[in-house]
Structure formats: C-alpha cells, structure tokens
Amino acid sequence: MTDTPIVPPADRPLLQVRDLARAFHVRRAGGFFGRPATLHAVDGVSFDLRRGRTLGIVGESGCGKTTTARLVLGVLTPTGGRVEFEGEAVPAPGTAAWRALRRRMQMVYQDPLGALDRRIPVGQQVMEPLAIHGIGARAEWRSRALELLDAVGLGATFFARYPHELSGGQRQRIVLARALILEPSLLVCDEPISALDVSIQAQVINLLLDLQARFDLGFLFISHDLKVVRQICHEVAVMYLGRIVEQGDPDQLLVEPAHPYTQALVSAIPIAAAARRRPRLILKGDPPNPVDRPAGCSFHPRCPAATARCLVDIPALKPLPDGRLVACHVAHGEAGARPRAAA
Ligand SMILES: Nc1ncnc2c1ncn2[C@@H]1O[C@H](COP(=O)(O)OP(=O)(O)OP(=O)(O)O)[C@@H](O)[C@H]1O
Ligand SMILES: [Mg+2]
Image (cartoon, rainbow, N blue to C red):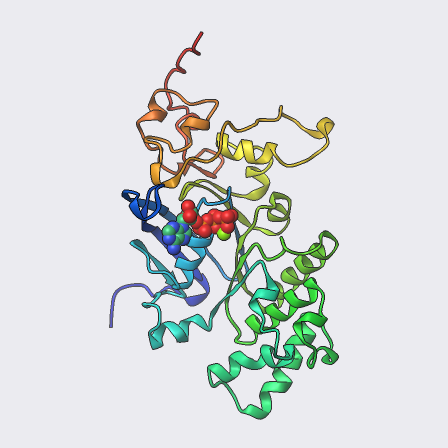
C-alpha cells in the first residue's frame, strides 16, 4: 500500500512534456570545413495535453515544431527534459516497449502521397498496421479496414484503388484511416492540410473534428494557418527559436496577442484593412540562425519594443493576469525604460 493518492486515469493528462530539449551538433557555414557548433532546435518546452483536446503549435519555419513532434513520439531522443504519455515515460526508440507505445500515438504528415506506397491498394495499406503489430485474426483485418474507410467518409469501393487514383483529400483520408486503425489516443498532425487544395481543407478539418469527438483523440496540431488553429485548437503555443513564447486560449492569443512576436504573426494574416484593429506590424529581418541565437530574449533583434533588459535577460514563460503564459519582459511590465531611438 502507498499513501500517494492515485490519480484517476481520466484526470491524468494524455501527454505531459517538461523542459523538453534537443540540440544538434552541426557545422557552421563552410560545410565540412566549417567550425562545429550546437544548434538548439528545441529548448525547454513544456505543455500538457488531455484526451479529446487539441494543442496547436505555430511559428515560423525552423522554430522547432517538427522536432518537438518527433521528440513527443520518441522517434528522436531528447537531450534534456522528459515526455510522459498516458502517465509513462516514453521509452527509448526501437525497443519493444516503445513499439507498443507507438501504437497509441500516431502521426499524420503534410504529404499524403509520400506517406503511402504507390504500388499497393490503399485498403491493404489501411489494414497493414494490424498485420505489423499482429493484432486480431487475419480474417478480421479487411472488415476492420472497411470500417475505418467508412469512418473517414470513403466507401468500400476505395479498398482496391491505388494512391495515384485518389485526390489529395482522399489520400489524406486514407492516411487518417491507417493511423486510426490501431486505436491511438494521440494524433500528431504536422501541417496535415497545407498540401491540400483550399476547397478540400475545410472538409478534412471537419473530418478531423468528427474523428476527435468519435474516438476521444488528443491532437497535437502543427500549422502555419492561424485561422485554422483558432477554429480547431483548444490551446495554442507560439514557438520562436526553440522556445514557447506565448501559450493559451486561441481566442485570446490570436485576437489580442501579448507577445510582440505573436502580434507580428497575427498582423500578417490577410484580412481586410477595415477589419484590422491595429496597424500591420512587419517583422524586421529573417529569423536568426538558431546556431547563433541572440543573447537575452531571442526575439530582441526583431522586436519593436525591446529594452536594454531584453538584450541580456531571457524572459521566463509565466502567466499574465488573464491566465495566458507569456515570455516577454515588456508584456509583464518588467522591461524597464526603452532606449532612446538613434538619431
Ligand atoms: N537532424 C537534424 N540535424 C541538424 N539540425 C536539425 C535536424 N533536424 C532539425 N534541425 C534544425 O532544427 C531547427 C528546427 O527544425 P524543425 O524541423 O523542427 O522546424 P519546423 O518548425 O518544423 O520548421 P518548418 O515550419 O519549416 O517545418 C532547424 O533549424 C533545423 O535546421
Ligand atoms: Mg516542420
């Protein structure tokens, strides 16, 4: 017997990520002859995700979204921090324990054609995970695949078709059917709709919402599309150079962003000028090279509000009075005086 209170499974987060970090050893410009350097792709990321909920991850290219997803799935080993899935630490990749856990966490990528084998009928590809994991009797695999095809809105006639005979949206439905046949509790979606025709995107989003409700799935949803994030995510985390800089309710964050970086992302959404509440904020320059991450707040070289403190002191991700988390001295009113603009 133990005195530790048992957390009922229903109250336990599906996913708990704490101080997750991944550094890569790379060479600076100059190829083989370039000096070795350390690239901090993900640096101290923490979040929780519950069943039936969606956490969106947004941010510019190279900010560490896919690396975070790969660390969560255990495909990549962290250099710091930890990931717990359904209350258990994710085991080392390639082990039997990891393979067993991977059944419960599936991934959907941007390019459905790349995820499918062009030489094999899609129905067989949907039932393939059952064969790989040795689940159920062979006779049941086909009927289970047909059930999943039905769940993603494709009839039995699709079973014998090949990927090239399908549209982009239909292929992504096949990818979803194949991911869901193992009855996962977590689906990691890395830009799942951005390769699809705009007219198809809404259908696939509705399907994702339908599947989430039906199977009580947790979604980690990586996207560049802030409108879609606002539509489907219960929470959103904004990443900049490997760190979360703002996190909270999408209606709060994407309407009244607190971090100057989120403000810049939101102001880049194409909306009619008349509907825009604040002037458009254009970010100065490209994102810095993650190998040469600026000291202090990484965003300070591009930030219109940076003060002397921002140049030296890394801001902690902590709550504002409205509950959202922000890593910004200025948003917390702790930045001190603005330096006078150069004449
Ligand atoms: N295996 C690797 N070796 C070295 N650097 C890597 C490796 N994988 C990722 N990186 C670097 O880590 C950083 C984060 O990459 P990541 O793929 O996570 O970005 P992302 O946010 O998914 O970008 P995008 O929106 O373009 O998909 C980038 O600077 C990338 O070059
Ligand atoms: Mg990516």
